[in-house]
Amino acid sequence: MRSAALLDVILRPGSLHAHFQPVVDLAAPHSPPCYWEGLIRGPRGTNVERPDVLFGYARRKRAEVEVDRASLRTVLTAARALPGVTIGVNVHAATLAADLELVPFVGEVLTETGIAPDSVVLELVEHGQAWDLRALRLNLEGLRDIGMRLALDDFGVGQANHLMLLECRPGS
Amino acid sequence: MRNLRGGREPAGSSQSQASPARLLILDDEEAILLPLAQYFTEEGYAVVTSREPEEAEALLECETFDLVILDLALTRFGREGLEVLSSIRAAHPWLPVIILSANVCTDVEEEAQRLGVEAVLRKPQPLGELARVVNLLIGRVS
Image 1: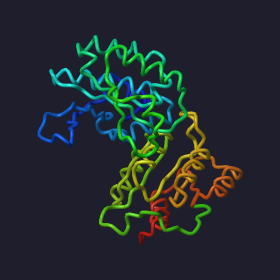
Image 2: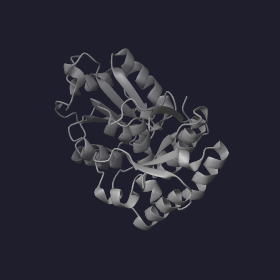
Image 3: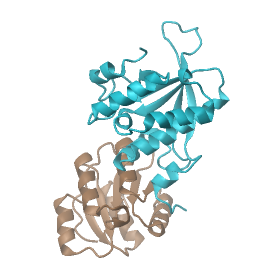
Image 4: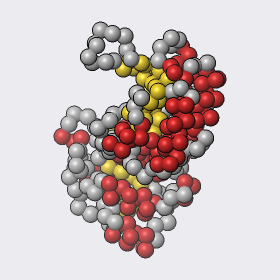
């Protein structure tokens, strides 16, 4: 029986879950994965278990920041079961452009989970382009400063654009 | 039943495939959703229910449906049903929509027609009559 608003269900601790897939270098197919990308799934048995529906819903509820934060915490918490590997975690560009407390939040989650910042690749996901570029730049610099690596997810797909490539400077 | 217009051929209709036709039912009352879902599932449809407009809109963006049954009283989630209808129409112009709602006044009914709704049905509605309209709109012989 559903009674709570769906967003409350999504943000309930333990509601989201993560799966990991290897990201490999096609030029070196026999090498170990570059890192393991954490893929988020919504609450089991709900309409938002699929990530596209989950984030489509979050976007419409103007709750991308909250859902991205919950996803990041879920992935990094689950990653404790994979010691010694680099973890990729997705964050929407809209969140980087809206959440001025993102860097301290990420630092808090890294401390909680005991994962070193340089063991995390933060993958930027783009949807739309109505960003506050100043906030986006501040967050990107802040994340680099604490030692995280940056990547662009699905670059060239959908509304991905070259501006993000310049702002993000992936792998730099 | 009121204002049943001619059924359109739904884009991407699953009628031509082996899989059952897919219905999306949006109503903020669980007590309405559960019996509707059970009835149409027993009728051979694949039914997805949603209590929130944003959830339904995200589902429509990511999945294919053959018909939507929409309540108009969605104020619990801060949205008006006609606004949701307008949003669905804009994104999915060929998707048949049935309004199933209590207290549909003439003005609302006219606005729903202007927005291109296929049928307006008042609650309470015999399930058999609702099923007849659904079958008609998605081209299934009842």
